[in-house]
Image (cartoon, rainbow, N blue to C red; front, side, top):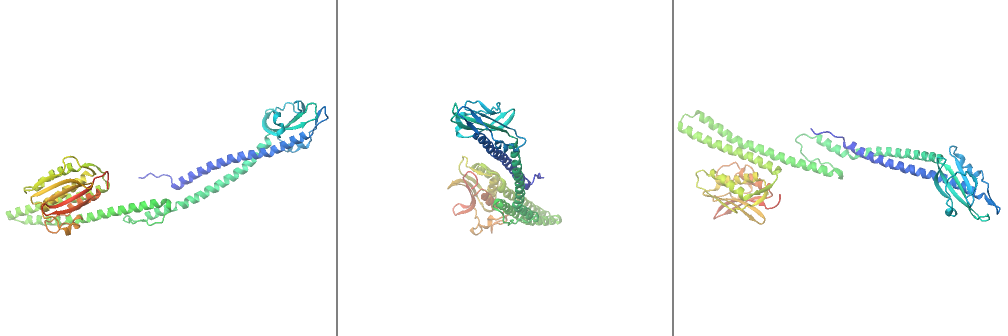
Length: 461
């Protein structure tokens, strides 16, 4: 049973939801940073304005420096009831003129002339934002810049930052939720063609192997094409097996019927001489039936291995010699001269040794049964980058008009003895499975020759 996993829809939505969550988190962080910057800019303007107003109130009579901070300078800053405001004013000699003497915000006199300086600091254990502004006093005893320092705690800034962040967060979350809903709808729509494929396959009968014939988006077109290709291959395999089973049933039924009839005759025969003749015919019929059955099984094996067997290096010359030696006993008492022509060293090609041996054995059997009178030769050689495996005999051979027909299963050549018509078909299918071919040649001085021409390369041609 195939284990059931989570749906593709849920996986896609989960991944996209994760992406949206990460994006929302980054946006929230950016919103917080932006809100803090906006709050600082707003309150920094107020601080700078207050410091400049105080600086404008610094005056000198030539001997002493005085300062009268206006109330308006602190009025705007005091709008935040939770914030505290600290300030001090020092003369060019860093003597305190007014304000908090313990306000420890440093004064960088080298840059006072450049304008107000904003900086963060701490006062009485509280974080503060401060501004340092300068006022040049030319007619004092010691001419130079008087410094104004104004500091404010960060409560109002924090409240404004939080308020802005909450508003931005609500917008980000709302947009993320809408985006996730849109993503779910889009994914569902995008996966609809897969549901159509599932529906078409579920509605089909077990024998319907026609292509799906569905228009598919580019992303799943290859999937549909692969399914159609698989359907085509499966339909071809099923068709081959159906034809084989039908042909095999027809081929076996005839000899079985004849054998049953001969057994009936034998059971009623009283003459001893005729009984011996009938027994001999039954033995021949049984042997023919056994050979036919073996060939049918071999044919099925060849069909199966042509689609499943992996190729390994095979010594064709050694295989030919061994197969020829095993076939010698098939001649019985007939005076047939068996011969081998070819190299003694290995002739190696990538092949299925079992199928190749079966093909050669069938060619030798055919030559002995239907052709060879006194000579049968197996030759191994090379020609134009291919390996040639030939079986030659001195018989009449197959008429040229039958060469195309005898390659098909159960198609015997016209004339000669009766056969199953499978031997040459098996050899032709083995040659085709190896990327080669089977052909026939007639030599008036040597006889008839069946040749398997196989690729001499690494892998299938």
